[in-house]
Image (cartoon, rainbow, N blue to C red; front, side, top):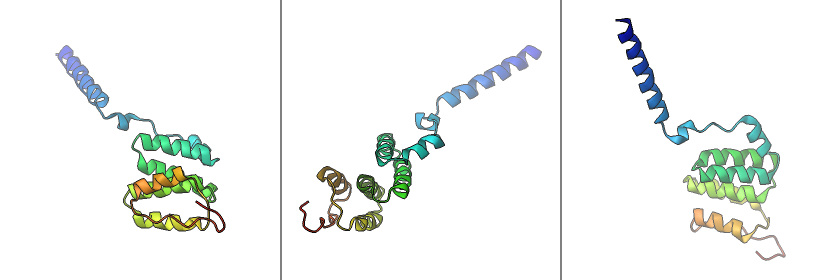
Length: 135
């Protein structure tokens, strides 16, 4: 009788292990540790790199959070703000994207950066270029 109980327990443990291994890969992905997140906000470039990797993994909300931390530490950083604006549009927050674009008040930015925003927000108005300069 004792052997039967042990076999039942081993079978139950095996089923539980199989169920755990069958979970989706995204559920098994280890969350980004705090040091990585803090380090990413130390420079706009590292923050952009981390945000783009999160976007590649379809973690748009994670990328949005990463860019928020970058913009908190570097409010003048233009490329992260443009990527943040594009993500807002991708998350159906066009109004929020327009508010972000209002932050550019005469800042110049690269055509490639604007193209990403325009692709995510069709028909959105590009902010005017700095006075005395062309786009």
